[in-house]
Image 1: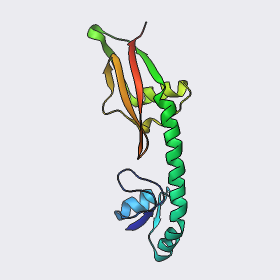
Image 2: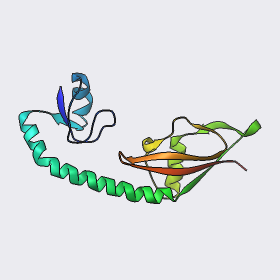
Image 3: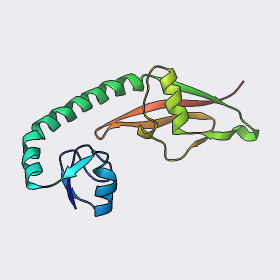
Image 4: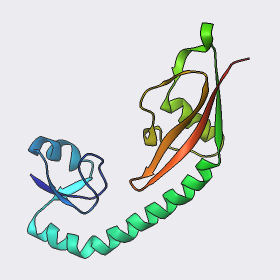
Length: 148
């Protein structure tokens, strides 16, 4: 099934591209969520017309992401957790914890934008990537400290 993407999808393509997907994925996921439209002749012609609109929208999103990256880059998050022997954490610090701490500092972000390969399980300072746009990546400073 050929579809035209209406939004960027990480593993599939960018907005405005014509891609081939399996029938079930297109019919059950992309089309109902309006992430894509069928690539008929009419829709392809309409796509050519909307390319300028898509380009302008992408530029606006990138500009907003750059501005947010500057704000978030200046913020340092401190997360307190209970620790056991040898300064090992009870549990771990996840992307959700970091997103909540950023929201408490006035910088709400989606936890899915935080790239944390594995949860943090030790005390210390870490830099976590915040992928705001496919071209804009900010670094968030996270400090995990022992709870008093």
